[in-house]
Length: 271
Image (cartoon, rainbow, N blue to C red; front, top):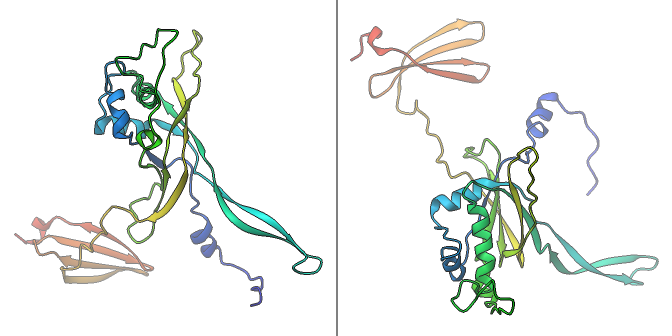
């Protein structure tokens, strides 16, 4: 099939196709700690109740992260075709680490959550573990006990309520857990928002395209009756509808677009 020839494009087509790019500032993350480490997070040392409010706080506090990536691992094939060297795929390789930067709230819930998660991996909240003892030992849990079932990053735009399109991309990290909490500088100089960066390790990711959760908007004039119509301008038409409840709705149409307003029914004699 031959490549298409170059052609001119109307400005209206360019605006509709390329003038609505995606932005970087609309996303939401979701962290769900495994049940085996929740006891540590909510235990005597960290005392953080993992409620729906806590989950929302963690989601809204994430100020910076990345969308995961992957690449193909290839091997070189020579002499299959004379003078040609090819790269053939034999495996897909996933990124295995991601950084999440959080604003820390005044109760340090973010730090308590991830510190408790990491402490839960090594059973540091057990009675036999004394963190002040120089010779203390710990026993690490099995991976399935500290890896989260999933951690998600949902990317969307500010007009996420579009109901006729796939408006979201949801990345799900499989087998994720915090592998590092980066050191956070504090200073007596001018105060700034305290932030911390957590590095998450994961096995792989999946991506799914989803639509808006908002229900499609119904046509408010679907069950209305036309009670009047008039030309109010060279290219404008006003149509009056009566809704089942007796309200009068005016719709002004111009060049294929319409503006709908609700008028005062008392002035028209409707009760």
